Image (cartoon, one colour):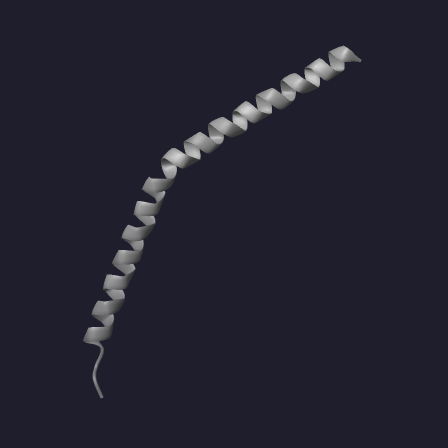
Length: 58
C-alpha cells in the first residue's frame, strides 16, 4: 500500500510541476499575444474609420 501511495504522490508532484511550467510559459507569452491583438484591433479601427470617412454623404 505504501508503494502505491508513494507512486501517487510522485504523480501529483510531477503533474504540479508540469502545470507550474506551463503557467510560467503562458505568463511570458501573454504580453506578446496582447500586443498582437492590440495591433490587429488598431488596424481594424483604422480601416473602419477610413471607410466611414470615405462613405458617400447624402
